[in-house]
Structure formats: C-alpha cells, structure tokens
Length: 200
Length: 234
Image (cartoon, rainbow over all chains, first blue to last red; front, side):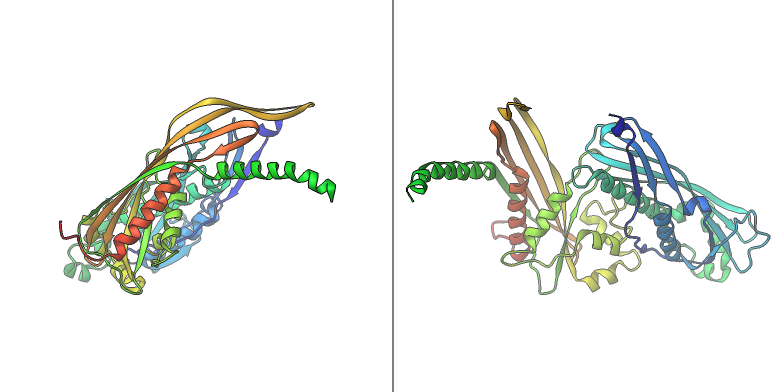
C-alpha cells in the first residue's frame, strides 16, 4: 500500500504536430512564448493512482510553431512580451499564447473506461502599437480508451488530442474573435477593398 | 520399450484432454447479422484508396481503436485487397478538418469540407475515393456466476463458473469523395456468451462477438466497394 501511494507516474508527452490546412492571414506576426509555456509541467497527486507528472511544454511549443506558421504569412519569435518591449519593428502584431489550466481524469476517478485531458489556452493579440486587439480563451479536450494502451500511453494520447483540439479551435475560430477582422483589414486597406469578406 | 508402451495410454489421454481444452479456449459461439443499404454505384479503380475512420465523440462511448484496426487489417488482406490510407496519417494530412470537433457529420458536409484551402488538392494527390466511418461498440449485457482461485501450502486451483454475454453493434457509413455523396451503410450485429470454468485450472470459452462483427462487417464492406451496380430491384 505504501508503494502504491508513493508511486510517481512521469510522462513526457510526445506525438505528431501536423500543419493545419487553413487560409493564411497576410500579416507579419511576432509570437512570444514565455518560459512557463515552453516548459509547462503539471504535477498532481491522486489518492488511488499516486503522483502524476505530465510534461508537455516541449511538444506544445513544437505544435504551436507549426500552428502559427500555418495561420500567418510571416512569423517570427520574439523574446519579450509586447508589454515589455519598447517597440515592435516591422511587425503587424504580436500573439501571446498562454496555458492557463490543465486537468485530467483517470478511469479510477471518473468511473469511465478512458483517460481524458483538457488544456485551457489564453490567446492575446497585440497590434504594432502594443495595444491589445483581442483576447480569447480556448479549451482543448482529448480522451483515450484505457484498454488500448497502458495508463501512461493512454494519458499521453489524451493530452496530445487535447493539444490538437486546442490548436484546431485556435486556427479555425480565429476569424470569429472580436477585433480580428478589423485588425486584418487595417493591415492592407488596398486589398481590403478587393476582398470585402475575409475568409479565415 | 515396455515402459514407454505402458505410459502411452496415460500420455495419450492427457494429450487428448489438452487438445479438448485448447479447442474450448479458442472456440466460442457468436451469432452475427449483417445488413446493407446502398444508395449509389461504387467500384474502385486501380490506385484508388479507402480511409477507415472511427467516429469519435465526447460522451463515454466510442468505437474502439482495436475494432477499426481489425477492419483495416481485414480489408487490406486476402483476396481483392483494398488500398488503405492509415487513419492517423490521413487525420494529420487534413488537420484540423477530421479532428472530432470539426469532422464532417454527414456526406452533405463534404462540399463545405472541400471548400477549405488545400483539401481538394490533397484528396486528388492521395487518390482517396471513399471514407468509411465506423460507429458502435461492444457492451456486456449480462453476467453472472462465481469464480475464484486460491493458493495454499497444500496446493491451489480455480473453481466455479462465470459467464458474460456481450453484444457488438457497429455500422459503417460509406462516403464517395468523387461524387460528394453517401454511397451506403452497412451494419453488423453480433452477440455471444463467454464462459470461464474453474476445474483446478481456468478454462475459458470465449465467444468474441466483437471479432465476429469485425470480420462480417469487413467482408461486406469489401464486397460493397468492389461491386459497382445498384441491384435492379432498387
């Protein structure tokens, strides 16, 4: 019993990072990834299962690099938050993704036959003048059946699916966020006359 | 020589018992029913491919990965093997449009899917002709009996008898990506009762209705895709 309760389950999440098939926004965007985002790790103790350490910062970073490159025509990584930077030369805006929450359920807790994970992202977009254009929250969810894999593999799969779901929502729903359409049209007034409706 | 001759009847009896136990462990009874509903012509040209997709949902029941793997293995082997594109590779290629949240719910959504940038080009390049969405699961509908195993310094063994009845119900919806229509549906239902008897050693008699449903569904699906004509009485 002492061995069970002191058991530590460590997972470094790995999986594929596909590039989304979406229309690119014609903008030069800086993306700021904080150290917390790059090295995110969730630690949680569950009475029935011991301690879980789930590290997915690196996988998440790789995924978001693919994601942002597919969403905008030009993407550069910046090493400072737009609120700390004195200027944003040559950029139309800066996107700041953050992980606000991570949660997961095991079959022993939920009573169901699968592992599930959810990640809450907060996305903030600043314009070239460092003014906040839009801020929105996206929750990605994933689940994986318990019988197909061992528990670590199942939770790895569920977390990867949550990352993919969150990325999908960010890519597909970007144009629905307040302020985005106006900002895009302000970037290129000439092209906005020819394309009165932006399909994102 | 005499000793080996005297031992033979006992050895022969043990071998026969072992054989019976092996057959009992492997065999099981499952009753399977398959139904097909065809809405359009099908047929596959050389090079055309099929993708088998498990329908994911956010409730507590969804198609098992092992079932879609079984379907894929059955379709890609044997006579008239069908060229398959693996599900995960397909989902990666068309991300995010086949993620659970954004996947098309019906064939009528295909036109919208093909309006997304790059989708038509990738479909043409991969020569995917059909999508087969698999939905369903295998559930335990009844169980009973008692079974236990014990071990002590004097020996051990398993005693008792337990059973469980399973029902496997699955449906395949086939979409034609060339015509952007639903080509038809195939359903397979199987049920069976498995037993576990304890006669010192545990003796399983497995029905495996999920496997029976897989084989039946895959066989009918292969015939459905390869046959071209709608039956005259439709």
